Image (cartoon, rainbow, N blue to C red; front, side, top):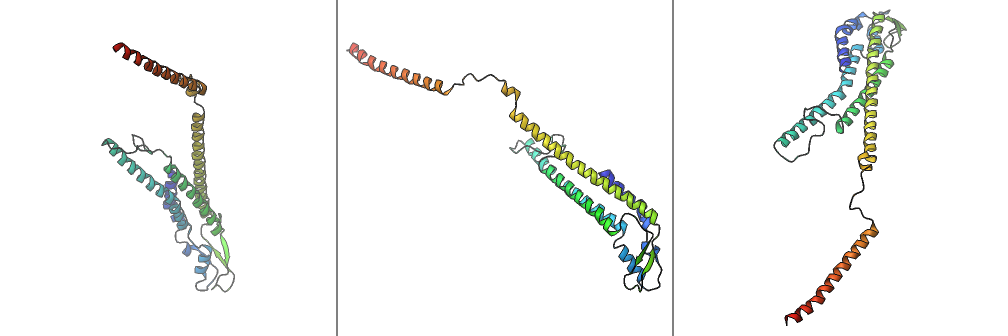
Length: 255
């Protein structure tokens, strides 16, 4: 994902800006009416392709930046907990990082990571659909404009339509690849979480060490416990009666 992000920026900076350039001055319309060309250009291209792709990169990368901020905040908190543990303070153990500082994506981090992936998918789809509705995916060399102040149907021509079409398709392919990778990553994380939960549940319900352990020595059923209790009571009564009977005899012998 980071490679695609850098690749987009490099393409925009190296090639696209030179291809589009000053598109308004390169467009020609068959009219002498003042302001007609400006109105036709604004009608055909509400926003430049270059600025549209720059906005796409900014909006798509914003959820990732928010997730990175959240991850840095969590790591900072867990580093504080680890320092408190080293000072022999009773605090809870770090949950999202190990002793080496490696981040484990689970719990709140996993939720925020999946959230930013869902937002990236939605934004990628929105920009792809928006590009199709604004311009389409093929640049037609000529178009007709009837906007005011044009007095009649005016024929206009754009410069380098084939080269621009190649760049449009190229940026579209990159956006589709980024969208597919985001969807695959969401599916992978969800499947891994489901498999781990099922594995944990199976270990809880079936543990071979517990199932084959012999029964405990002191495990007695209810009837045996009652009989043992009754025997103890009888023994205590007999001992008490024996002590009572022996005490008068001892008193007489002393006399």
